[in-house]
Image (cartoon, rainbow, N blue to C red; front, side):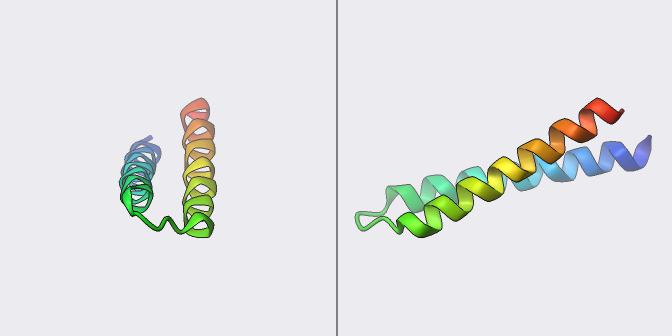
Length: 57
């Protein structure tokens, strides 16, 4: 159970980091749309993984 909790916390931190990175990228005058899409996809993967872990616990 402790392993799952630490994994969940790690995923939450990674998701928050990606959210911050996305906001930073979107704030640029010349947006890198390819990078923005990559971040969004990675963020969605982390969210899906987080939800799977939460349902397992």
